Length: 384
Image 1 (tube, helix red, strand yellow):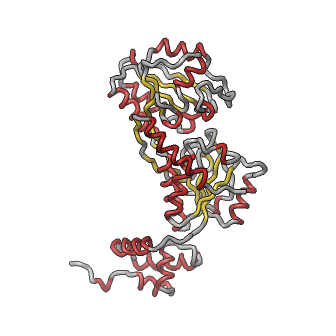
Image 2: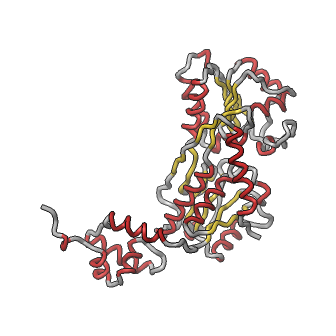
Image 3: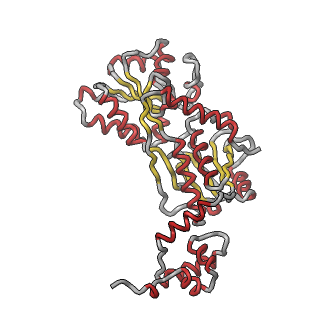
């Protein structure tokens, strides 16, 4: 038999048990910071004692009522950039992290402000003090230049979500592209187009930043191939690839951050020995690298694919890492943490994977990216 509705635990009964108003009971169950921690705990203890469970239909109705009103300003969130100034990162694909996060923040009534971690004179201690003085509780970290990045703040005061894997310490909730499936998709699409000898040109630093997921997926793909089609991976040391994607194909890259770049003989010897009919670039752009190290254009008979289409040009198909959506999802998750007042480092960090897009037409993709990049110049809020 159905239970008597009069026996059901309701919000009114929870409020009566906790000795608070109906509004305070509602905020207490949502862990809202507008009421004291002591009151929140009293409400939650009363709800547990009575066996209270929210009615899903009422919850949906309340969500609709709250969100049908004009969005009001809530608070300011911080977007932490691993650069010294705006000019250092607007041409990165990671700039889309900011645009996605800022757009989503505005939709939810928040404002996103950029803090450059490499700004002259700014220390991590000073940054933490600045954020607290400004009343900023929510942080989104962008990708870092080097793998294994560390950020030291007084974390008990902040809710934090990282974009990508490059922030290694502390371990926080993060949103990232599904790099493993993206590599499998690249090999699948190239194979479907008739390519039999697929090679991989891999920037080892960038592969480290994605936890070697590119390399792992490529080796898994090769595992099912005949030995004669298992081409060795051509590894490149860490190079500042943002300079290599300059508009001029003759642009000279800066010296590598560490190690030595693959020389002309190494690259040419690999290409001649493996005879690929397709080359996947991961963390680099093989056609550009080939032209700069050999002095000749990359062979036109080969099909080129890039694991980050932003690093390529019209010669390549490849993966749109959906960085804009990663930024949006990171902001949505951060706001959820703030709504529940879940500050501090998580006991069990969550990783949310965002689906990529396969791009056949680089020109069409690039037109859309240029519109976002132009908008970035006028929409961004920087610290002074």
